[in-house]
Length: 270
Length: 348
Image 1: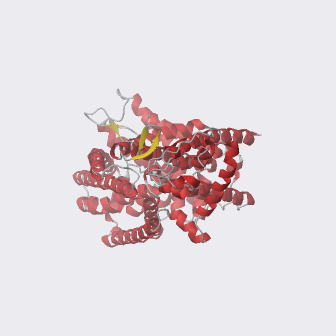
Image 2: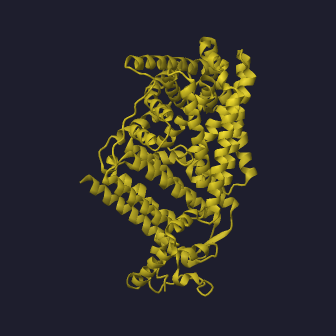
Image 3: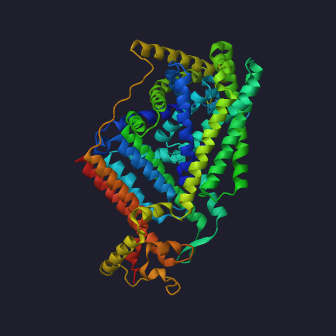
């Protein structure tokens, strides 16, 4: 039940965040979607032993969170919820890959530990960038952007519909679950005897709702076509943002900035 | 069973993205042609239904633990494979965006593992033959469990293969398989039983919902065959193209930049380093602190261009490691202060 409730709250929090009015929020949704996708592909394109050159990419989520006035707490919380499985898989790397790859004083660093670190940083970067996209753009604008970049309309409509009714259904499920828990002795979960009837009842109710929604749509002139919001135009701001982000990404991809900085400061060029 | 961005390579992610994108547009066309407009709200609401159901905990008798439902086979039974595939794709998209479950690049993998496999393999080849056109409670039970178990086994195996081909995790194939398959056998059983009791309940209370998809003639073998042909053609073309692109040069991105500019980026990098070398004498703190372990055996460290240091990675070199560490530390501090500064600037 806690999961159900927190999911619902999480959705609401992100929806609320997306209604803010900051520089990042005011950008065209297409711009933000493209930048995020490029960012994710770029992060994953680094080799498995790359650690230092991934770090400057942290500027991207940090800058967006600051400019977009996003709180750190919900994003970090979500990150911690996702992390265990990936970290668990990643922890096998130090076990299976013991090739020494770098030396720090008298310590030998094995390839496994380096790639584990790399996975952790990649996890941090990809998870935060996805959450930031939705928290600065909102679902409706993302769907508009999706249809703009060529995603077929039935898919976009499906996502929009599903997202809209998710809030309603989560509320209803929450109530049903609560009613069940209040009438049962153990509240850890649903007893197996009630599996079919509880979920089945909810399903029947959901289908009735779909019927009512359909009728309501017909009453409002639905003819099988769902009009989508027309997208906002690209402005100079969007071009500049895109140009800036992409050149920053390319800089990070081709120049190991921390390495250069460190070499500079420790006098490695001499 | 969500694949994550951190564990996949762009080649694997891109290939499955292309494959599932092709499949999704095929399914979208099918849905548009075959179905009545009444299905539009139904698909949306059922997507929300499965999403919300995934949050409900079901106590597993005798174990004290609880499980939840994935819903792939359930949706296929209620909606038919094409609409179910689109519905699952939408669920996974919202999960990737709002909960960072999986990831944006891994979305293709996840839609394949949790959408394509239950809708286009488990449902038509296992559930339908077992249940037939005259469902009964027993047949529904058998068909649902078999389809869910097979679907999750294949899905888990697909996760193993995708991870393996990405080469980010060092887990050996057999260890990973032994890790994934047994646990997904248990998950599949629970998924199958929950699917069966729900479908059984619906069949008892409102059989008109189950009947139409069971009798739907448009879901014949020909349609499924087409789907599989579309999928594999796309996967082979993009996979082949992308891996050629990636392997013809150790770094596909660099290679493409060289192709566009007509020159390697090394030159620019040389200039940057030359510039750094010039000013570093003035600002380097710890100027006498030379970490280089073996400068003689290391011609690269004289001018320290990017590519040569990278090539020298496996050669153990304390100098580069320390420089990397110091630089990383400074980068993190800079990130923090830039973040704070922007926050102040944004609030003004």
